[in-house]
Image (cartoon, rainbow, N blue to C red; front, side, top):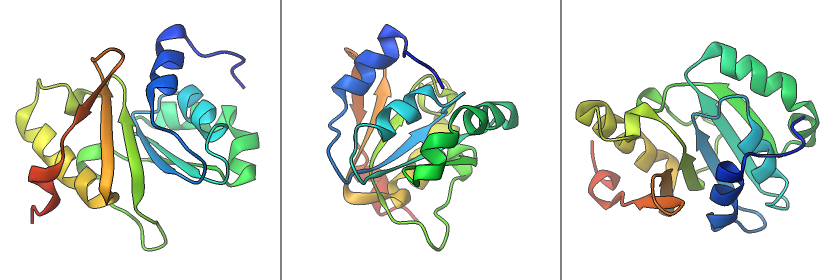
Length: 148
């Protein structure tokens, strides 16, 4: 398990509106350091960490045994533009994406697909944050909430 997050990731976690019981979707979790940190700050909440890379998912699972066993963290291989809730999943209150290509503005079609899928996975008041602000930027999802 990581003993410490980078200053950048630590600042991002501190900036998130985390609270007990919140459900968080982390997009592009990499080896899972931020997901583990968030899972320790949300009481009986839950983090689902996803990444498109099988290698990243293997690393995240290997480094997150305690959090996985506690039930506060789940890890799943998925690309955000194809992400769908599973039948037993509950909607998320918050999504966070750091260095995710599908959400960085370089791929408009991919970004539209990703935001449409995200809007379906979040509660009506659910919020999406990405890196690039100071340290976060919120992406409005209203335009995607009623997309087909």
